[in-house]
Image (spheres, rainbow, N blue to C red):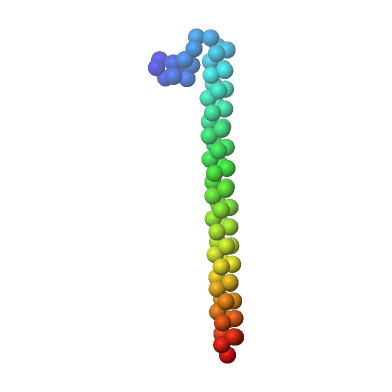
Length: 71
């Protein structure tokens, strides 16, 4: 009986349906937020890898320029 009261806390059927829809909306919002966070994290990780690769190229180019100017 306790489990039924947890999912249907109201006496009215309409209130129980509205409560169920409200809980579903909250769960949907949490899931959507988590999806956005995960996809943004993956994009940021990819961008950071691209930036690191560009920084390595810049360092290599600076070394080549120094060597060219010294010789």
